[in-house]
Image 1 (cartoon, one colour):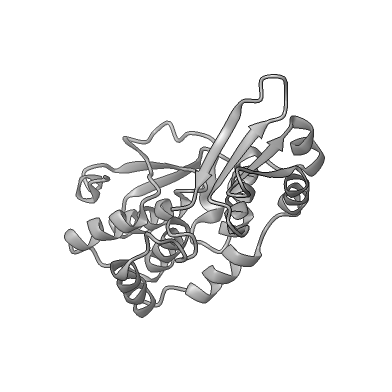
Image 2 (cartoon, rainbow, N blue to C red):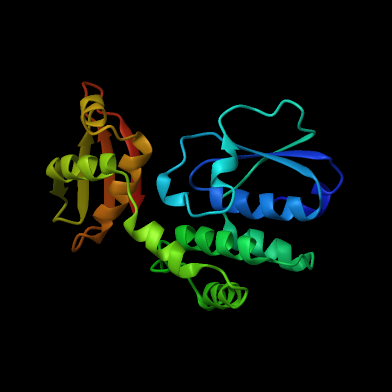
Length: 222
């Protein structure tokens, strides 16, 4: 876990994040600015447009800030980050609250996951009290998707096969599918997660459609 107090020892901090951890990176970016330190943000993968409502989305770059004294590869556990901030008595401003809410939304599958307990919702309530823009977050995360993902979704669900008494779903994905839709492998991972919403399905396997038939990812009902 990130030692947020250690950050204050450096004059220039680089935050490296992907789509799963960008919300947490936005939290830390806001916090570092309150310390009057220089902070840079690098995205290790192309950021999803649905995160464009978050603070500092337009500050993220693909190039490395070579002058950074401390490089932090940001994790995706927003609950732990919140607890770390609380334990150090760090004030959470509105930008941080919005970003934490977003991170929790992702971490607990829109708060529908069985892992979301009373503590989770207590944190959410606290963030809303701190003026987190939760309505905007819900709008963007639930409704804002690139056209390429819609195209890929149609392809993948057409390729979906139910096996093992319809308790498992197998989905084939080819390079041509990605090229035709303009989507990415990360988009495919998001779509395959949605297949868990099919009645009785408890496991989804994404398989590379070639002679090797490599398993790309497996997700299971929790």
